[in-house]
Length: 247
Image (cartoon, rainbow, N blue to C red; front, top):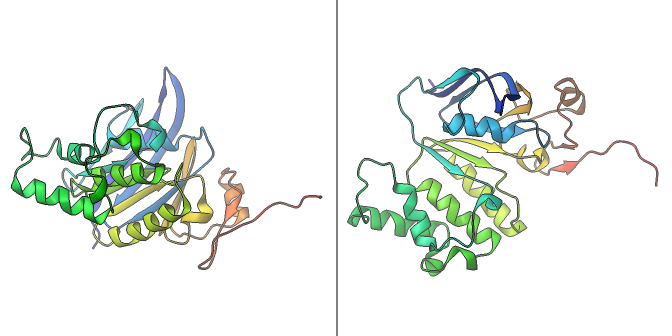
């Protein structure tokens, strides 16, 4: 029987008194792989902030019914200040903060863990390089390593394919399928065509939230959900479905 990790219950949230999300609910179980889609400004990132505890909702609540869980978070690369004087290894290591064993400087076990994460993400050779010198894909690898170092129950990714090359994007999605064997994943993206072939279920967020317990969405269903996404996928190869147009 699956374990309920996080429960978003009738949440409304926004900024400066303006409501962005209205009465949304979502249950996240262990080994879920949920793709979150929706238009820009529809509230996807706001939902993530509420889930992470970075934004207090106007009403409703987020609970962890099975007890406290560890959440790994991969933010959009654009949110990172590349001029900040920190190395790849230090950024990955910073993910250990908040763990009960944290002390000034990692211990022997943590150093081994950091080295393993750097190896798995292909960053060993860049460990002492400043993040300002990294490519978009290398920075995303570093942020993924930071998210994974805390051994999360739930991995949350906000538009992870933004500003990265296709090679990294393909590797990332392969990693996610492997990681899903041991943790739940919430993947936010505007490109359902890319993600729908690997996520298990889809949540469409456009102020309200409509949950679809499958990874197959039709254009008609998206219209009913008021989710204006123009990318539909089925089968192993994602492709784009466009409305009729004249050349």
